Image (cartoon, rainbow, N blue to C red; front, side, top):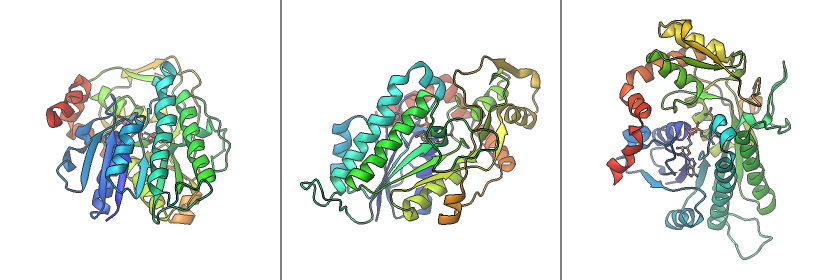
Length: 349
Ligand SMILES: NC(=O)c1ccc[n+]([C@@H]2O[C@H](COP(=O)([O-])OP(=O)(O)OC[C@H]3O[C@@H](n4cnc5c(N)ncnc54)[C@H](O)[C@@H]3O)[C@@H](O)[C@H]2O)c1
């Protein structure tokens, strides 16, 4: 049995990933940890909370003591680090927590993994580790900054992050790669494009627009709405991470894109029409400072080297996603009212 530590497991992608992995690898033990910030919702994992192969700990990845205790208690084979402050707008207002969680928190995890996995910790030149271990860092295509017309980012593209969020993710990537080069720690990194799917916190474009549409509230659109994002279904992302974890090359970086570039305003209109609402709900607001105009991700490497491909077309994926939010209005209401924040106390005391 392999033991997988997933950080940020109560967030959008982390919770989808834990469900995906328990289904795909029923013999794995999964340890989920999450600080339960405003973005962490343990209800996202309600369907698996009684699964004997899943354990949850409320822990902040910056808390070295607690992280080391978890590593002391479990023999961990894989770490997948999703835990992060993830919303660009918040990073513009409060950059500090982005730098501490996303960079220093990652370093705490790297240290704990190095300490548990290293075969001869007393020898600073020794680069041997227990067989079959890996630290996978979840990064983002935003580290490459804004793409020019016709340009697609490859793994070799320079890092030109624009926001405190993307700068902190680029910083974490560099720290992870430094641990690979200096200490030989088995590390991989993936940089995915924008995800959509069930359980996404409604501060991000697609769930925000779906939920505001449902409640006939104004639909805020930044600037002219022509910013282009490359949308990827969260399950296609989870499958890619699983492949990298098991077959990716140690020390390598993999881009994961949706091959599906859409302007924000077109997404907004598609949701409006699917829900039978009026475009009069659209409310153009002042653009975000430093807003990247376009993201475009070249996924050739993961496609050709690991055989990954997308299972979801955007049209079908978006319709399913809208249906999911409509079918889970209890979840939506508990988020909108803030009641979800009481779930942990109610369930776990
Ligand atoms: N959502 C996207 O489109 C997207 C695209 C590319 C990459 N990513 C990356 O994927 C990861 C997950 O993104 P998401 O959209 O699921 O974000 P999210 O905000 O939904 O989830 C983040 C989770 O991390 C937890 N967390 C925050 N600070 C923590 C800390 N100090 N210690 C422990 N847990 C903490 C939160 O409670 C939350 O559950 C992030 O690393 C993000 O940078 C996201």
